[in-house]
Every structure is written in C-alpha cells, then in structure tokens.
Image (tube, rainbow, N blue to C red):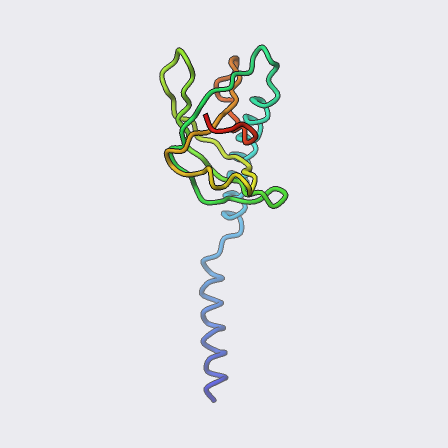
Length: 135
C-alpha cells in the first residue's frame, strides 16, 4: 500500500507544480535573454570587424564574471563586467558577454588584465581579444 500512496503524493505534487507553470512567461523571458545575447554578439562582431583605421586595442580589467549562460561549439558564453582603460579618456565600465575558449577560462578572474578591441566610431562595440597576451 505504501507504493500507491507515494505515487498519489507525486501526482499531487506534479499537479501543484503544473498550476504555477506559465509557458508564455518562460518564452518571453527566453526571448528577452536571446535579444540581449544577440545584441552583445553584434557589438563584439562590430568591434572585431572594425576597419584598421577605426579599431583600437586597449587594456581592460575584469571587474566581475557571471555564470555561464550557454555554449557555442563547446566554448562557454560568459557575461563579463570590464573596466576599459582607453588612452585619453576616463576608465569606463562595460558589460558584455563573450564566447570564451576553454583554454582561456583561467584568465577570467576579478582583477585580471585582458586585451579588448574597440571601435572608435562606436564606443559600445567591445570584444575581448583572446589571442592577445595580457597587457
């Protein structure tokens, strides 16, 4: 008799969880996160594809590292908060998401120095240059 009682308890728990589940809200949340990620990738692409006359390579300091939000070809997508140190301008904080090669994950620690590429014409376009050594 104990087995059937446990099955009934599980059915009640499943029904209670189903009442609180809103697939529409989850879909809206997923769409919002996807828009943010697409915007971040578009910004990084603009910085990496900037013509040589517009591209600037500058040092940045890692302020914070978020939890992995997904993967692209087994490389994690990591939200980063960086302090960009552009010559002639005050340091500025930049929030971005970056696809981090697994071999470079050790570089993501608060206080660590990274090299980033910027577009002089679009200050929002920022991308971490993982092939460059730390400044």
